[in-house]
Image (tube, rainbow, N blue to C red; front, side):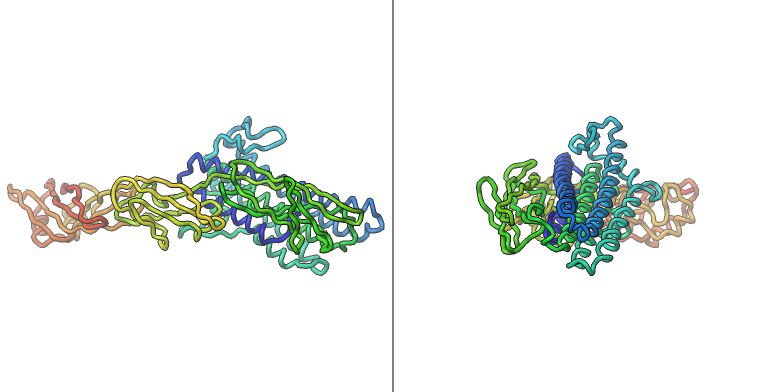
Length: 527
């Protein structure tokens, strides 16, 4: 079993970063495939943890059989461990059923991903289907599966913290630190990306408009969180028993790999140690003939690089001296190596606009924001406001590099079209249509400039001048204004209009981002 909350928490935090970074508005095929690889890696790690957790309980049961005189001492701890195993199994299978149902709804009952006796995320066809996720996980009236999932996780968490740890805290060491670790693993807190996220629930933030494969990976991560909680609790339960209760043959090898997913060329470090550590035992890991002795804390630390893409594994065995002589235990460290994935998501729309600050989220999977350097061609990136302002029409190129383990890595580029802000639409203040009553026209203050309704930026243009032309006594008369307000001369022209008359407002100019714009003429007919 893996021990220690720090390294394991780093792995979970990294996975949160990976998932958060990749949830962009425009999800490319590369990003969807990256999610698939992440999910495969998570499931491989989960399978190993399941076996290791099972082995820990098996060791207790075997000790009772082999040494019945110790049964009374071990049985209470075995009951607790078995209860944790049962609850973890229930939550794991519940989450698995949600994954299966999501794929069935998206791809159909005959989906190749739903293989007999297994689940293959690399065979999911509707990777980017977010509609199914919204319908099944959230529902129309907040009655989707995500709300039940929330309750199931909370019930599991309460059982571990209250019924197992708190109820037995007088018999076990370091309970408070483990409670803190589990509270961190199974929490419903999230960091809002913007003002709109402040109003969202955990369910909405986690699943709303999320691609199917990202949701599947999130579910796999929840399963791994539960298994990690189980491993930590089992370790504490076993360590709470007198170490002399166990023979050396019952000691298992634990592998703590904080980064099961690596960016290509990134270095990681894993720990290999005995689950029931004895300071008199000096374990040594043998990998490809090389010897790696344990540090003073009994942990063997192995450094490795992600040089080759795809699923990777480090295998070896640990040698240590027990009462009966030299003992060996095998181990395996699985991990995934993925290509660097830069995600740049414009938070307003699919292009950058000239002369305005375009809000963006720029992140790299597995890398904290303060380790990312951003470079922009044909524009400038403002770190404090998280925005990019292009300098000319055409194309804007955004690139990023990340400091990974002390080395700067190029994380890729993304290109965006640069367009001019749309020309505003002229309107008479207080009048919506092209036909207007004489009284309404007389009551109006002047001419305003409005942005098109489907334009998402909150921009202001101010009218700086316009001309009013009317037919007056058989003659065409005009009067101009040097701002957005009707002049007295223009009001006099408007006051003499009769039903059926036409008003032409021309030469409309408006000041806004990028300078002065010429607006389209406005023609009104008096009712």
